[in-house]
Length: 506
Image (cartoon, rainbow, N blue to C red):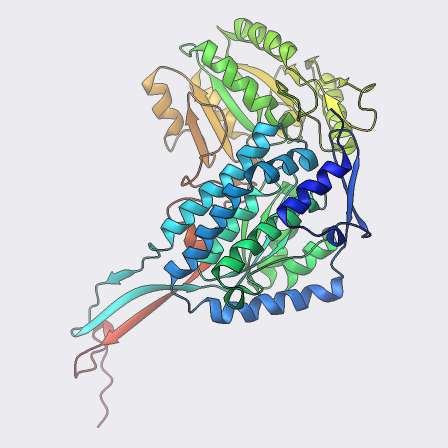
C-alpha cells in the first residue's frame, strides 16, 4: 500500500496543522514505508531559540502559582483531545515513523494513559513533616515548580515520550520546549496542534507558551541543552547522544533526565514455558523492526534447551509477515532509513567475523519499495558475548548465546554497558527471585515470564549505567520536575539553636 501525500495532508488538516507549517521549509519529512516525501517543515533559526525559551520562562512565572489540581485540569483536557484524535494521530505515527498501525495507535493510547496518570499525581505532590530537635518548631519538606523543561525525543517514539515529560512537567508547574527528532517533525506539529486545542478549552490567556516547538537538527538541540534557563533537560535517544548532552548540562549545573539505549537480554531457563517464551522473544526482538529502546537484542539460553528453542525461533522468524505497516497482518515494518540498514549489515559482518552464524538479515521487498528499507529480522548464534554483541545496534538482530549455570547467565546479562531492560523465563521461583534480587539483573527493568517491554504507566520507566539512570514514570517521577526546599517554622517565643549550640547576646 503506497503512501499518498494527499492523505497525509488530510490527516494533518484534521489534527489542526495548517499547510503553511509543513510546506516550503528546509527540514524534509519522508515516510520510511516507501520513501514518499510528506512535507518540508520550517526550521527554527538558532537565533530564535533563546526567544522561545524566554517566552517559556515568562509563562512559568504565572503557571507555577496556579494550584496543581487546576494545572491537572489542562492535562485532563489534553487526554480528552487525544482520545478524540487517536485514530488520526496514530495513523500519522505509522506513516512518518513506519510503525505497524496497531503500534501507532498504541503509542497514542500511551499518551492518553500518561495524562490520566499525571492528573492523579497533580493531587499527590506531597512533602513531609520532619521532626525538629528544637522545641516549638516545625520542620517540613516542600516541593515547588522547577522552571523550563527542555525535551528532546527520538524517532522511534515520536509522540509518547513528549507526553511522558510534558504531562508531568505541566502538573508540576513547569513549561516545556520540545525539540523533536528531525525524522518525525510532522508528528510533533500534530501533537502541538492537539495540545493547542486543549489550551483553548482551558483558557488561552492562561496557557500561552506553556508548550512550544523548536524544529531542526542537532544544533537546535544543542542550543536547548546549553541555555541556562532550561532547568531540566530530558532527552531520549542513543547513548552517543546522551554522552554529548549529559556533560554539557552538568557543566552549567543544570539537571538532566536521560533515557537512552537498551541492548536488552532475555534468559530462558530449562523450566520455561517454551511456547510462551518463543512468542515473547519474537515480539521483543522484531516488533517495531527492532527499533525500540526495549527491543531484545540478546538471548541467553540454557544449553539443555538451546537446540529446541533455536529451532522454534528459526521457524517463527521465517514466518514474520514483512510489509507496509498500513496493511492488515503486517508484523515487521520498515527500518527508519538507509543508515539503519547499513548499520545492520555492518553488525552482521562483524558477527560473522567473530564466529557468529547468521540466519536472516537480508533486505526485503526491494522491488516493491526501492526507496525504503525493509529487512528480514536476523537470528545470530554466537560462540560468546563478543564485542559486536555488547554494542547496541538499533535494528532487528537477536544474538543467541548459551549458559549452564544461572549465575553465568546473569553475569552475561549484566556484562554490557547499557542497563535498560531484562527478563527471564522460568517456572522456578528461586531462579525468578535471584534474577530480581540485588545479586540479579542490574537493569532498570527486570521481568519474569514476560519480554523486555517496558514497565507500563506508573512503573519507574528508565534504566541504569549508560542508559542514563533517569526515570520518566513511577510514583515519585514528579520529583524530577520540581525543586525541593526545607522550611522551619518557629511558633514559640524562644530561639533555641540546634545541637546545643549557645550564642547569647548580652
